[in-house]
Image (cartoon, rainbow, N blue to C red):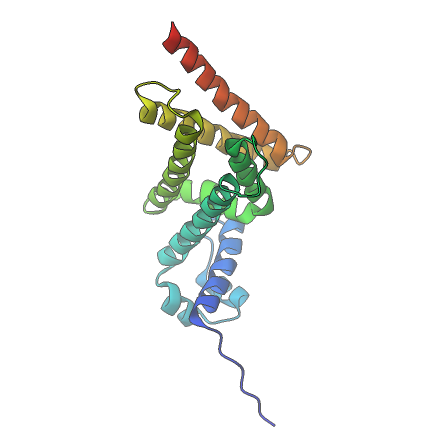
Amino acid sequence: MKTTQRRLPRRIREQQMIDAAVTAFSRGDYHSVRVEEIAEAAGTSKPTVYHYLGSKEGIFTACVRREGERLIAAIREAVHDPRAAAGDDPLRRGMHAFFTFVTGNRESWTVLYRRAAVQGEPFAAEASRMRDRVMDEVGDLITSCTGGLLGEHDTKDAQLLARIAVSTADAFADWLLDHPEESPDAMAGHVTELTWSHLRSRRTATAL
């Protein structure tokens, strides 16, 4: 008796294709990856991949956008966790979520920060937009945590501290992947302490 294979919803099929593309792009650079191999890994055809995601450029851009959104969502969820203990530092929670994402999603990190940044436009710009959104999240967090302690230039100083935190986290992420004996919690502690030490220095300078 002939059976009819159930057709998957478009959103699920699209996510399967992006999953396959993230894996492919993490293993090879943009130019070496073939759409045929993405299609094969996703269990579909090359024309179907193009139908869903457009060009090869569209496929790579979809990877960067989705993985960036996943990273931002992980940070946001940790920062605003209603189950967090009273007095628990939300910045450290956010940084812990960042490093946990990196170690748990090496392929995503490779595509976001090691592939997109060196491929030129439009991919570098897309990765930069995602990074700016992470910095905005951290900047808003720092502003809320300090409660006006930064002085009359709160927003500017919060953005500076956010840039310090995110740039440090970026550098530490590569270190963490190359040194598995380190932990996301330890890296989160280092970044948080460095960020707040800059704040303490800023407050001291302002008070003089």
